[in-house]
Picture 1 (cartoon, rainbow over the protein chains, first blue to last red):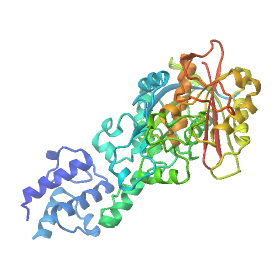
Picture 2: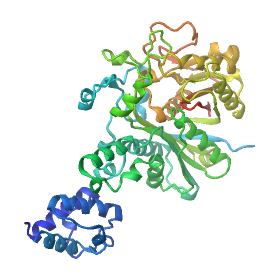
Picture 3: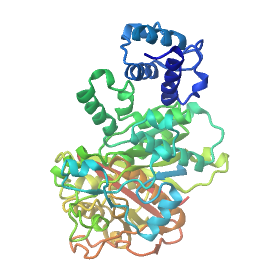
Picture 4: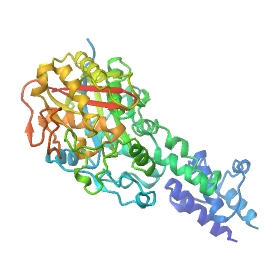
Length: 81
Length: 411
């Protein structure tokens, strides 16, 4: 079980790996599409990598609800609980 | 009167140099890009061929990590070579709606396709990368080059096996002449040094099996030739309408004076033994370029070093050039680079443009005992091309009976 801080740091690492964005740019209130300019293909890669890293399942139909980094952190934290 | 097309930029990443100056220096010196493969899969699958011509520079060391991640190696090579050619052209401002791409590949994203298949079998469908489709599609290189340059007048991908690169250049000429573009980034890329293509080409007895002596394996026209050597990389040429190039005071390497593209309609892999399709391509190209046989002083031959392939090309050259064939300096540069499949015609066109520009023919190595049935004047030591008006040809032929010839004239 990871803390929200650990999940954020882990997500930031995954986003950096996929897009080259600096990890510190990945903040809770940032929108994946509008702020971080992440397209749907990159988003799916990030989702699958997050599933592996955090040992959770993020259903495809859930992905569209993960608008901000905070949404993703919350979803992963709940899924781990 | 058709618009004149000129070459104003060159790029290459090859087994004998990761950029044009390095490649050209080596091509004039005569080096072999063939090495024993160090990859673990060579032994794991007990491949019958254990060597190839790897690109001398890894493209993912030139591109950023994120760029490289989203591109198949074939596309990486295409982007590296086209960036060099673009910079070399000196074009700073351009109407992007008048800039097109014609960039070929023979096979496409074979690494991506087979990696995804491995992932599917080992880890399941969820782990197959979402980027798999755009990375494996054969138009991946032309699409990536188009995005990279902002080329919006179309991005085309002629695919004709080992004639692809030359056919892309021929298409670039057509696009400019037809008024559909003023500048075209043309070229070809290939990255197929993977266990499966090696096994498959080997199964059809196309590859040299000189495993104990890779550097002497690619030996076009030699009596002991036993197949081609796989290569990888890309070549890129900026083609430009002459008036466009003159208006900006561009450096012009050569005129791309014409092209000829034909099909044998004979056999899926074997060349027509009389070289009839190749002869028609040569004649069509020379007619298109308004060139006479007597003008031709240099040919960069397809010459892959297979027992059956090298001779019909001679037959075709003899038929198209007549007695002038004896006065032509023929370079078989696959002896140095290996066979870059869909990229070969582009890399060899880069060399042919430079040969005309600098009036120097690149070398053919490993020619110890020339096949008496192929009595060409093969360039095996430093040789200058004549002064005055000259014409040079680059030939490429591909499985499927594809024949493509492009014609270069001094500017």
